[in-house]
Each structure stands twice: as C-alpha cells, then as structure tokens.
Length: 262
Ligand code: 0O2
Image 1 (tube, protein in one colour):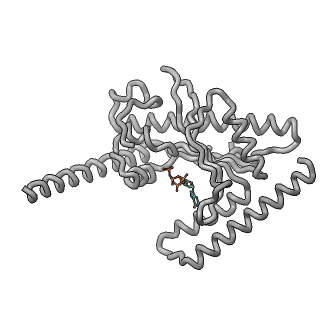
Image 2 (cartoon, rainbow, N blue to C red; image 1 turned 120 degrees about the horizontal axis):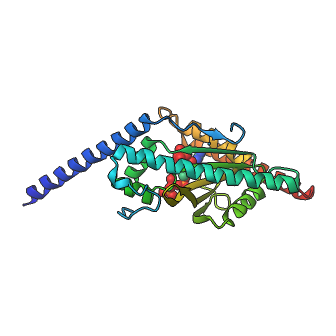
C-alpha cells in the first residue's frame, strides 16, 4: 500500500516536473521569438488561483501557449508605457511650478521568462499562465529615481491620486530598510489600459528610490549576482555600512534642501 502510494507520488512529481519544464521551455521559446523589449530610460526615448484574469486577452483560450505569452507581454509593455507617460507628465508639471525635477530618471523592464519561472518555482506555484498572471505582480517593472527622499513620497502621492491607478500593495523599505541595508519604496499598482476590445487593468511594480539608494542597490546587485564568488559575513557587514553611509548622505541632503527652502 505504502509502496503504491510512493510510486503514485513519484509519478505525479515526474509529471509535474515535465509540465513545469514544458511551460518554462515554452515561456523561454516565446520570449526568444519576440524581439526583446529594450530597457528604456526617460532620456533615451523603458496563490494558486485559477481565476479569470482581468488583463489576459479576451480570446486567450483560442490561442496556443506561446501566442498567449506574447500577447500577455504586449499588455505588460502597454502598462509600462502608460505609467511612464504619467510619471513624465508629473515630472514636467512639477518642473514648471518648482524650477526643478523631482524625477531624475525612469527605467523599465519586462521580467525575463527565466526569472518568472524561477520565481514561480520559489513560490511553489503551478506553471500555468493564469496562475502567473494572478500571482506574479512584478512582470512589468518601473524604477523611478528621485533626488530627495521627500520627492519619492511626493511623486508616489501624485501618481496614486490618479483615479485610473489602483494601489494593490506598498512595501516601504525606506521607513523599514531590509536587514542588509536595502532601501526603496515598492508599489504594486494596477493601471487602466484601453485596447481594441476593451479596458484591462495591468499590474506594474514601481520601485522608487533616491540617487543614493539607487547607487547602493545597483552596485550591491552586481556584487551579489557574481554567483561563483562567496560573500562573507564580514563583506555583508561592509555592504551594510555603505548602505548606512548612503542613508546618512540622503538625510544630510534632505536637511540642506529644507534649509534652502526647496
Ligand atoms: P529583478 O531582476 O530586480 O526583478 P514578492 O514579489 O512580494 O513575492 P519579493 O520578490 O522578495 O517578493 O519582493 P521584494 O522584497 O519587494 O523585492 C523585489 C525586488 O526588489 C527585487 O527584484 C529587486 O529588484 C529589489 N530588491 C529587493 N531586495 C533587494 C536587495 O537586497 N538588493 C537589491 N539590489 N535589490 C533588492 P528581483 O525579483 O530580485 O529581481
């Protein structure tokens, strides 16, 4: 009896692994088939629920997986474009009345199929497109870099006050930094995008941080992703110290801005 159960479990596991592999391959294949969306910068112009998603194409069930994936990516790309335009408008408007920009830089990216598959595996989610769209909210990502800490919150406030932008989640790693020193304001928003067959709400992750926070996060990311190198606890402590130095610089610049009545 035990043996039979064991065999069945193994068969199911094998089946799941095969399904996972097939979807992952299809995701990667679909991604390879379309031209990669380049990272855009402002100056250069980029659980387990089988629910119906609000932003999958209406005729999704009639398309094969690779086509559905490609179509889905188009929706995320549209969400990024729409949100980027909103941020650019806010930046220009603020500039007109304050003679300076609260946004230094905007970057965007679509998460790679490889990273999406890894994240779904880490969260123990079945590899289905509906599960993906209902549970992974950072497929479309925008990073907004601001000069001052107050700019981060002001830009977030201006964006969230718009009626077609719905706040889904906030993670404030500025008020409560991660243990390693990472600071950033993370928002998950859903933005209304109109397509030929109707309106969809596209989820986008917006990471907002200061220039100093971004300096630390970008360089730390490069160091951490050198997979063949070991980062010792002494190195982690030094990285944390660098994050604290950046935080102090942000605080001093903010104080200066207030004294100069920015
Ligand atoms: P990539 O390539 O940047 O997209 P959740 O999404 O809520 O289920 P998760 O993914 O842990 O859980 O969310 P969290 O904590 O909000 O962090 C997500 C993203 O924040 C990461 O994306 C990074 O971009 C950034 N981030 C978080 N912690 C750190 C950190 O310690 N250092 C740096 N440099 N960046 C960080 P991904 O998915 O890692 O990859």
